[in-house]
Image (cartoon, rainbow, N blue to C red; front, side, top):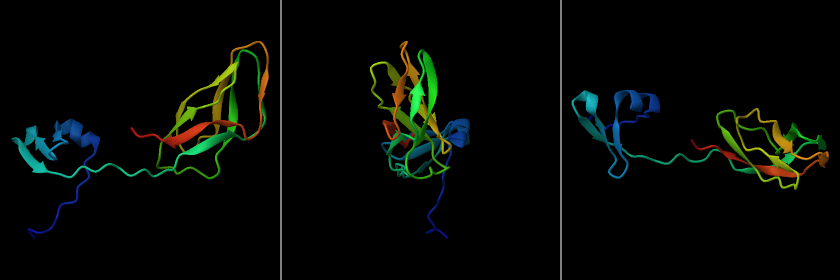
Length: 136
């Protein structure tokens, strides 16, 4: 079976514990703990599994003075469970700021901080930011 191409997915747990040396320019992998054995490999960039989307307030929410509050969010459809996400706040208000988040499929709110002595309201459907696949 000399013409059977190998199919192998190597995880970081194996790469790290075995001390594998990977040359991404040449595609050569060396195994120092196996008497320097080496093999050629193909390294491919993972294709994104998620299209980025806008995140909007799901309901009208009043942010009280000098506080941080959770603002419920909506973004159309359910999120896939096998993907991690990065939320980037683009919310612009003179007295408040939204926080960036790393989250998962259970993403349901964004934290917004009010640094003033006056409450303000975020209306339903206000754009709060953007949700993208978190590429680690």
